[in-house]
Image 1 (cartoon, helix red, strand yellow):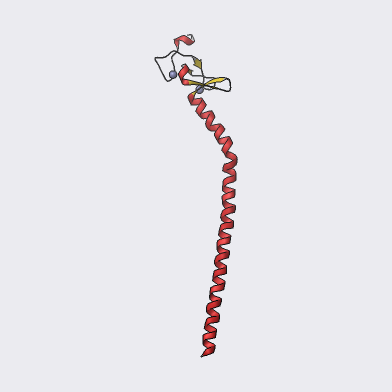
Image 2 (image 1 turned 180 degrees about the horizontal axis):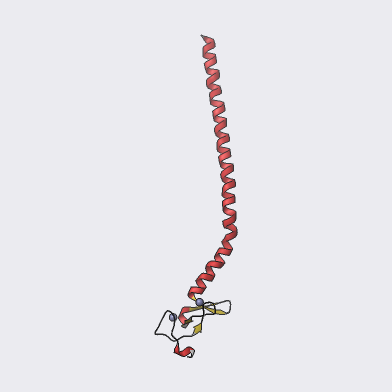
Amino acid sequence: MSIADKRCFNHPDREVAIRCPECGRFYCRECTSEYHDRFLCKTCLDSLGTVIEKQRTSFWRLLKPGVGFISGFILSWLLFYGLAQIIYTIPAYFHSGIIQHEEKK
Ligand SMILES: [Zn+2]
Ligand SMILES: [Zn+2]
């Protein structure tokens, strides 16, 4: 059985032009794309593309939660620090105000 007898995996009516080196399936020219001097089918190209994309974003994916955690920690610390400052200052005013009021009596 020669390659000419085979039909495209996606198009049963089309003659095979390329055999995908990744999955070994036969495809017509339309179903394949050149990738690093190799002709791969679109399915393999997509999976390769996602692998490359994963490798590219893995660093940021690892970094992002750390940055998010640190910035969140700093933000919450600042928020609590600011709140603590407000909480500490407001009762002091009230307290001194009450004392002054009581002293006047
Ligand atoms: Zn393939
Ligand atoms: Zn095809």
